[in-house]
Amino acid sequence: MQYFEIGVWTVLGLIAGSFVNVCLDRLPLQFADEEQRSSLLASAELSAFLKKHLRERTLSLAIPARSFCFSCGHQLNWFENIPVLSYLLSRGHCRKCNAAIGAGTILTETVHALVYSGCGWFLNGWIWPLTFSINFSFLWILGHCWSFKRTRKMLFFAGAVLLILNLGVYYY
Ligand SMILES: [Zn+2]
Image (cartoon, rainbow, N blue to C red; front, side, top):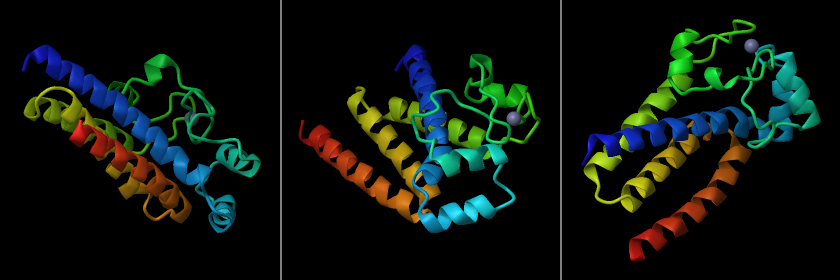
C-alpha cells in the first residue's frame, strides 16, 4: 500500500464525513413527523431561520445545495466548507454570526477519515474497503438518527438497498 493510496482514502473519508454531517443535520428535520415538527417549532433552541425552513418544508438533503449555518443561514464559501480544516480555522464558530458549530461535526469527519483510510490499509483492492466504509457511514447515520422515528424508517429502506448492494459485492 502506497502513501498516495492512503492519502486518497483519507480524502475520501473526509468527503464522506462531510456528507454524513449534512445527513445528520438535515434528515431529522426533513422527515420530522407532525409531533416532532410542532415540538421543534416551539423549541427555543431551533433558530428562526430553521423554523422558517421547517414551516415551509423547504429543507431536504439536496436543497439548499450549499451548506449553511444553522443559526443565521449564512451560506458557506468553499473555504468554510473544507472538512476538519475549516472547523479548526474558525475555532468551531460561524464566521458570520459566531454561533458554535457542534464538535460532533469535526468528530464525524475525523472518524470517517480514520475508518476509510484504515479500510484502505487493511483490505485488498478497492471494492471491499469501499463497501465496508459505506456500511460504516450508514451505521453512523442510523445510530445518530435512531431516536427520530420517521427518519429511522426511511433509513431502514436505504439500509435494505445497501444490503442488496453488499450481497452483490459478496457474490460478484
Ligand atoms: Zn451563522
